Amino acid sequence: AQPTSESASPEQRMNSRAEMEIGRYHWMYPGSKNHQYHPVPTLGDRASPLSSPGCFECCIKCLGGVPYASLVATILCFSGVALFCGCGHVALAGTVAILEQHFSTNTSDHALLSEVIQLMQYVIYGIASFFFLYGIILLAEGFYTTSAVKELHGEFKTTACGRCISGMFVFLTYVLGVAWLGVFGFSAVPVFMFYNIWSTCEVIKSPQTNGTAAVEQICVDIRQYGIIPWNAFPGKICGSALENICNTNEFYMSYHLFIVACAGAGATVIALIHFLMILSSNWAYLKDASKMQAYQDIKAKEEQELQDIQSRSKEQLNSYT
Image 1 (cartoon, helix red, strand yellow):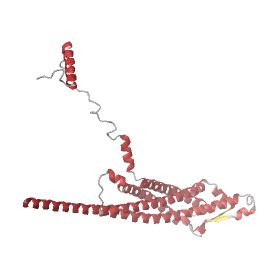
Image 2: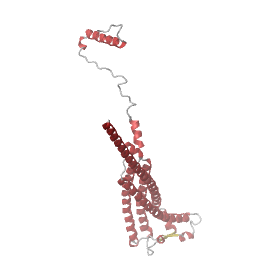
Image 3: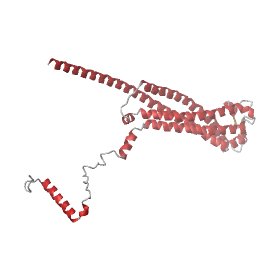
Image 4: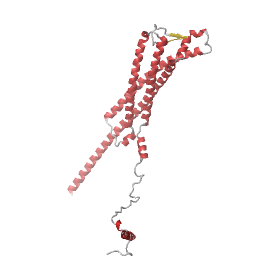
């Protein structure tokens, strides 16, 4: 029995009215019967833009996984090594030119020094390549031991091999830090030598000594530093000749490049100390994580054994009943 208009619900009356309107439309436009009508999705059926993660949320999640301490140490290490290698290489070449032109005109007198400087330039190439790779490795190690990265990649599992690798990085970074302390001290030696020559030139240029006979008695003997033998000629420069050396472009550039190279070595030492602190904290984190993992495994095993005992007890009670 069809419901009457009085007994029909409001929804049924609304549906019947809609069907009547559609039938009237088909009667007035017969060609529209083949047209298919699709229901318009409501706001409830549409996916809200706030329900799915957007670009901003993804960026925040990615930035949360960046080990900023390791990133700062890597940038500082790259900068220090680049300054030391680049400036040191050019400054050594300028030093050889100054020695050959002014302090040791005989090539055999400074042949050993030239070979040592050439060897140091090749060592600089190796240092730059090694620390480029080592900095990238330490940055990658910082990414994979950061707690934010562990959350991004799911459940974290540590192994004895991973802890051994972290400990090896700690030891290697400590050794490299001690070695770079020696490099930093060694790079200060040419700065001291060039500073003595520059200060002597400033004394020559001072009004008290300029234009007097005492100027020619102010000398610099490069042989006393031990970089060339005592029989090297001339080995000692005095007066106006020394002032002319200080006014050359080679001296000016070499002096300032040695200062920058020494600063780069100091920055590298600071970066390695920073890396050492980061690696030590990461190693401690891995050690604590391994202990927590072992505790969770034991706890899960005990819970499983307890569940097995309870299930066997229930089976025995059911068999008795």
